[in-house]
Amino acid sequence: MTRLPDRTRRIRPTLAAFVAAVVLTAGCTLPVFAPRAETDLEAAPPGSSPTWRACPEVPNQLVGRGAADMRYECTRIAVPRNWGTGAATGATAGPGTGETFEIALIRARSTKQRDRIGSLVVNPGGPGASGVDTAVYLSFGPSFGGLPTAVTDRFDIVGFDPRGVARSSPVKCIPDADLDASFGYDPDPRSQSSFDGFVDLNRRIGQGCGAKYGDQLPLYGTEQAARDMDAVRAAVGDDKLTYLGYSYGTLLGATYAQLYPQRVRALVLDGAVDPRQKLIAGSESQAKGFERAFGNFTRWCAANAGRCPIAPDARGAITAEIDKARVFPVRGQGGREATAGWIFYAVISSLYTEEGWRELAGAIDELQGGDPDGVFALADAYAGREDDGHFSNLFDANLAVNCADETEKPTRAQVRSLQSQWREKYPLFGAALAMGMLGCVEWPGERDPYPTGPAVGAPPILVVGTTGDPATPYEQTPALASMLGVGRVLTWEGEGHTAYPQTPCVTSAVDAYLISLTVPPEGLRCPAR
Image (cartoon, rainbow, N blue to C red; front, side):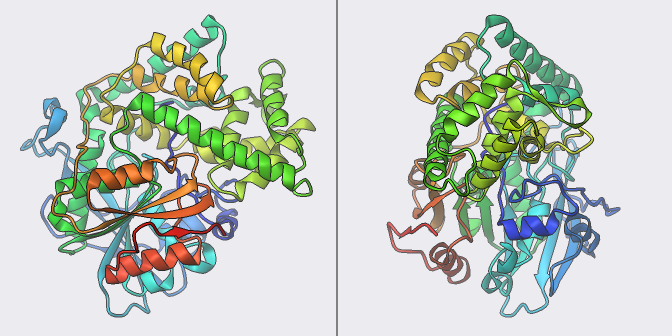
């Protein structure tokens, strides 16, 4: 796999529990891998007005019902496969060829809406996560961890699946067996033969995707998707874009602001990605962020032994289980083995929210007793793996987008060297994040990097960061704001990935910005819950 998808959007446990009957989740993950409703809508051609139709089946399949007082409508729009810019101009689907991708949209509109401002377009990140699913979950209101009624009373909530994701001309080129092998692989292979085995696995994945998509691979990059966002803006009938982007969605939003600064009304970029970080720097940043978050978890565990059955030494307990799994992995139902890799991804999954800490402690405690089900539940929720071993296309799209964007391509020898260097600096996560770069090292095709400059002419853009964020470490928040030139930083001194709408302080500041365009005071810091 490539750099960890920072990028998987989390919601509050109340909503996760609500959907648990239809989606296998870890109790607090946004189930971006839920069954997806297909439609028979024909995509509106580029530049034409789309036809919207009622689609209550989408929330029904995702959650079991729609939110009270919400109506759901869906459409599909066609966008050029190649907008004719950047390195992607070398692809066969160039401008003027008539070749298109289909982009799926959903619109949730409150029956209590008044004084409508327009549409709030949302994206959960990934890259590879579904904005259609996210719009449905966010429509359920604050009681379920969704958007405040102050926002849904004034905006339609519009979600879209970016090109290559879920319902939008999805990329699917990695066999389930290879994804199983990748997630289950030792996150820190010490021997040269084990390292070479992971290289071979990533090479096989890259070759398979290259054989299927060829010179189309650069077309899944972020700049192309950001240009699609302007087609989404036009499809919902707004002169200017109001946008809420989480995690990788902040990169999409920042790219849009650079391409179309005059068409920005308000952008909230929560869980900021620093666009100027290359692959090595970005991977090390995540290693540092996850190591810091893991340290916060272990300190919580030591101070809350009554809620943490692996206290007082949670780090020791987890590393011991990973080490044992390298030799004698615990077998679960059907003979599935809780290898070092699956335990590692259970840890990763749990750190996206503070609520996940208790789940991780319980899962490791159960693993010590010979039951790996809790580990599998956490890791599978992260990986998009269903009970039958089938994976969503999250990681196919994640690789396609990240590797199309990335101009830096370290050598295998560099990865091997960084593996040992980062192991010393970030004991649990450093080596694994170094190994993760092999996904793009072995990825074929040209690259199509996105722009990394100021959004000249754009209004103020709100950039939100969480001090304990593992996946998009807080240091990236002021970096993104500075790059844009019009960014205003809002800080949450909390834990987990992304902040809105979790506390009254963050919520009121973001709501005022979205509704009234009131920018919060410079340097505003919101306390932890």
